[in-house]
Image 1 (cartoon, rainbow, N blue to C red):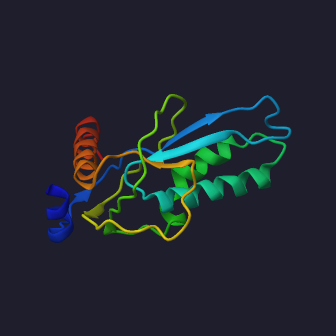
Image 2: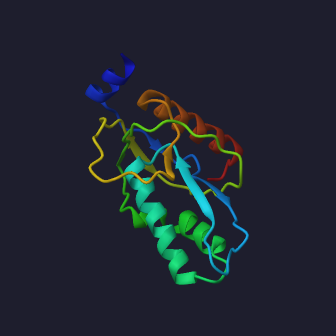
Length: 163
């Protein structure tokens, strides 16, 4: 079992680019006067608990901006503050949740930045916190997660010769 092997051995790999977070949203008729956008937040390399924390912060940002347009503040937060807000430092240990995939068919926000991360294969962890139903770790397994991160990083480095 490749997942069992990864859990037991582990490795570190320095990368410069992480796959994007995806913010799917829908604007209700009474936005922004009364209701916030409905949304889901999905990503491959953050655990459901971490994604849930981001969802809760998006809710707080809505409370601060209630009655005005909030999408710009949401996207700015996701792009510029995700790593600091979650106290993510290098090396970053990958964790898999137990959520299923969801379809993504609306707008995308990419917080991907030029980073030097050591990606370490982590273990499956029971999430103690309640996972927000809007938070989706859209990857099938730890081995596929590692493969997708490495493939994305390599493709972005080819596109960006001066990273």
